Image 1 (cartoon, rainbow, N blue to C red):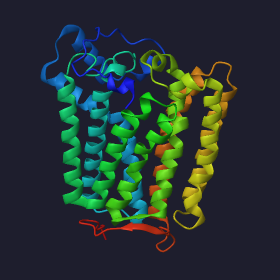
Image 2: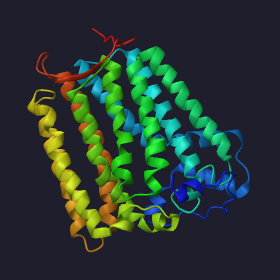
Image 3: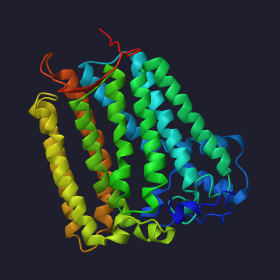
Image 4: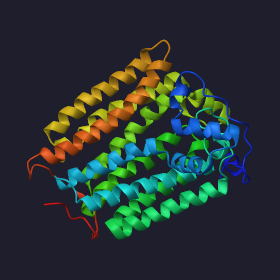
Amino acid sequence: MSDAIAAIPTEPLSAPRPAPPRDGADAQMTTATQRAGMAAARTGSGGVAQRLRDYVTLTKPRIISLLLVTTAAPMFIALGRMPAAGVLLWTLLGGYLMAGGANAINMFMDRDIDAHMPRTKLRPIPSGRMSPGHVLAFGITLGAAAFALFAFKVNLISGILALAGLLFYVFVYTRWLKRTSPQNIVIGGAAGAFPPLVGWAAATGEISLTAVYLFMIVFFWTPPHFWALALVKQKDYGRAGVPMAPNVWGERETMKQMLLYTLILVPLSLGPVTYGGLGAFYGVMAAILGLWFLRDVVRVMRAADFVKPAWALYRNSLLYLALLFAAMAIDGVVSAEGERSPGVVFVRSSPVAVAAEP
């Protein structure tokens, strides 16, 4: 355990009252929920409505929305049709609760960092609206509820995978790598790649080659996506003592690494087409989207002032992943039955509920 991690205070932090959001990127990163929380922190008001908003903030719903897309799409691919409504609903609800629990625990563990960054100092703990212990209990409760939901309403393997994602995010990324290595988002970012495995397992009770490909797509997408934000926010990370890539490697080396991961991501995204895991529609869309993503990375590298193109890359990369997985889901439904192959099956379990609508 590093000294930086061991030094996290155990008592509630008394952070200064948050200032209004700054212009530019900081203002764009401030959500309506956070602005309401800032007002409540200034005035000491808020009541039940503000507490409910804070609970929502702890789960980071904007981030989870993309995770749910990468959870649902594999279910359509695996079955070649719409999953049973109940299985889809329970899987998405369990996914939201598990990811929300992980995010709440992350805010508990990062409360000292959050107090020093304009993008995060409006969160419930650094603003003084919630105690660290309350947030930790909330996160653990969500994670436990999610595991029980998966185990009893979907199948055990999906619950184990979802829980593994939470534990990886909390202990490998948040507690260890984030504060010690510029590779934090590369290795720790694998936590965000678990949802495709969860969705595939929820639909089939298996983990196949196609599911692993989907995991790898998210894994290689994460570094260029997050480093684009790190380039814009490097001063904030520097003040908080977080060794993000631009602060350690420098801006140009970070951009080169972004290009490298993108050059791996684009052909990797076409991998499932080569053995029939996905069809021609997806293949065309993946190629187009990949070239779009690559163009944005190159623009960052060529810009004299990289802030605007890096911010555009960060936003567009979210859309890229959502559209890529939407193309997978569409391809899975429109492809003729028998055209798709899941590839090698690595893990097979006895599912509780994997029936699909006829």
